[in-house]
Image 1 (tube, rainbow, N blue to C red):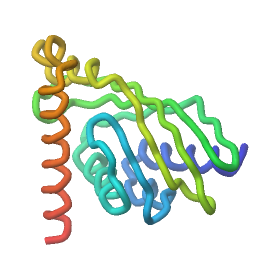
Image 2: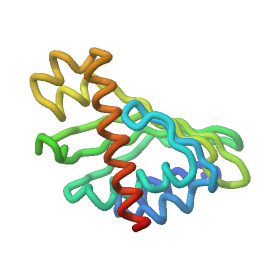
Image 3: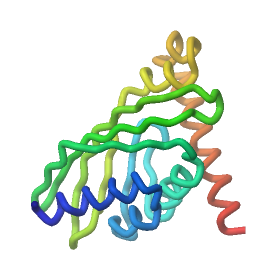
Length: 157
């Protein structure tokens, strides 16, 4: 197995165990992370996002496969099953991740998934009917950022 493929495997194995520090250890200090919900996060923001998800994900279940990597890039597919805290609705989110590596660590991590499908599962009928609209999408992003900022403030208090 390529060392960077092993790094991806280590990252998701830590995620399965809700071990945010193990995940963060796979990242460079200045990592850039992005996804459809949180947008672009850098460094400590990305680290705290994983800390928040691991702490709050009481029924979080992670599966991963399709890991591929070479010296510069990698990819994986992962799935998260959990109850969305605002609605208590069950979500199965299928995510396609891409990675860029530098000096044996993850320098860039991009997650892609269908936000409309996520909104339908997490928010129910309103998400199914309106999850494609810019208004709902921006509201989801704003709420996610607000939650992360609150978590970061509480962590440093």
